[in-house]
Image (cartoon, rainbow, N blue to C red; front, top):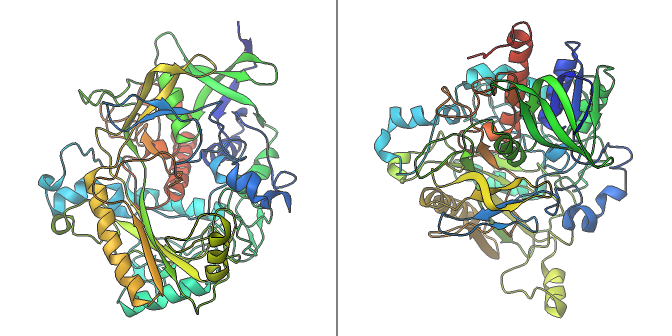
Length: 589
């Protein structure tokens, strides 16, 4: 018999970006709220204090901020003919562990989607017709538009504290910004970060080729800033310890910096750490949730937390798994194209070129996770899919993000990986390299999905979630197109050595090297319950008092880092809860 806690109005599963947003917005309504976080508590002080947090071995290599596979993992296969095996060591992606979630260790790149990405299927049909969509590709429109979300993108940028340069201000193109972005009602809260030498060189080369460079939109404070919750940010000192690290400087946008201390001041909010939610409990008719059952690590027992509203705000993979083991929706079967839960799993398609200059001196120890100049000339709303033979796009970025000596020591191909030859290579080339990266979209396919593994279970006896994913030819063609364009710009800069790394035709997914922590889909938004898991307000189609937030809502992955869309959708959802649901709990669609 599980121990039972006193009933709350709201229980939130996970205390990262979306959990923190839901917590503080609903606490303002006077609701009694508890958040359950499976990991440890962590704050800027003392957990991120200097110099402890810039220990590259602990945080950058041994991944202390990340989920531990021995406690929670997935099984992975590339297609239905393979046997999925458990992921034993993190590589391809790095889900977080602890208060703040992935918002603690992200690099800070914060993008809005393009309006066309929110209605991709309609965009393709109107311009090229269904005939260009490859067989097995599973595209869709979001049931909410860019225009509807614009105020909520703005709200998230103001709360997170984003630095940047507007490119489209109320329909007027602004010099120096991204001319291809969707309209915005106001400029970024802070001006863009300063430019390092490599990104300056890229900017000049891009301009010379008729392209449109602009500073990367950064969740990094370029100056002092106070957000709408009264939380303060200090200007970044470009220490280069952003991605994989908590920020000791109060400069990187994170739940700790932007929301959590303000949230903790609400007496009607509480949170419990080392509380791993095992399942959402349903009423006998299955149409509403009664609360959640979690495992209390300290007491080593199961606990039932009753609540009127359940908000799933864990990482995408964990949200989908929790829904599956709780029976919240029918699990997707690609063979029949029936079911919705686990459908449209997506990732990201990236590549890049490294340029070496013997007589150019860069300072790789000066940077931040969102550093650099970008172009969007080959983005989703710029490409002629019919002529190019693929659906998708990418933005590019050039900028030094860190000079950490263990993980970031670019050397020309053929340099020994250890010993005297490696030391000689470092001596010759350290500080003489820069890169141009392509960050691309990943379409959704029937073949790429999530379900429950028939063999492996976790420590609580629940089936592990199984990931079936491989690269598809459409996205590989897009990546090769980006390779050709990147190499044109790189060659125009006359490097002494240039080398590229782009996945080519026939490439297979490899779970070992890190690629991005941009796992998306699985509990996608939809206009009807037979197409997806949640409606336009992130409300479960089958249980109206359960709301699911995060990148699991993405219908297909955009070309951008997901946090801006994730944050905008979170504010859109809590606004609907506050303005429509609380006064009359019901299905909102």
